[in-house]
Length: 347
Image (cartoon, rainbow, N blue to C red; front, side, top):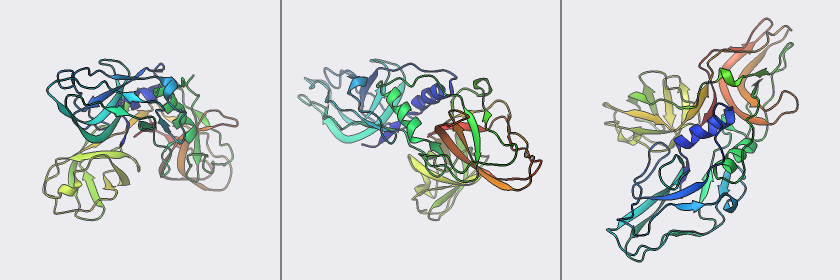
């Protein structure tokens, strides 16, 4: 079963992590879908007229296993009562919401197509339902420890707790899911705290308009304006005419410039003629104030290629990390990041 965190769930997760709008421990309810959901779009929920006895199924937090590697498994049977009638439909996906009806969508997934008729009993054995937050890859993403904390919170298993103090660090080597990359060490360098007041509310990364899609492997997409994506982001592309292989759902990308990126694992099937919209899964928290690091006062040079947030200034745990265009550091250089820079992100 493919799936992950819904974009609306990502907003709640980053609001909790950043401390901007902490979200309490949810109660999760599983819904069945008759159209395929995605991270950015809800499916169509089954109704009682289609499946008699239908209602969302509670998934108690105590029945979820502890998250490992950013993934948790539901360790109990999830049994929707057998349909005793109705007009029938076909179940192709599921969503996990924070309420019995209505509410906010947190997780989503696809299922093997299951027609519903009288007597159909939709069940999920223990171990069949998993949810995931991707951990740090390609230099961008969350540490294993903090991905696990977020997953445990949004399955209702264990509260995330107080938001950490965000201590920004600069690195000369990419970080991994388990450890900070080589930290910058120029004379005068120190980690810099990003105050909660200097962060904007979590928001979805806006869609972009396609102006070209190369007939190559992989396909390179050009956008009419800067796309705001980072390598490893997941996107859906719709509406491309001509090179229709560029129309993808849930595909990872590699950024090649502010207005171009490649669709990993794709091959073009014709010349681009027109159209196209790129819809990212990603949600980010951008700064509303410039982030200033101390000026370099000593001799020597270094190239900054990444940043990270640590949860303390002393012996910290890595929260998340990202990459930047290489910045050369020499004496009297001040590495600053302008307002609007994205420092917290989920995709």
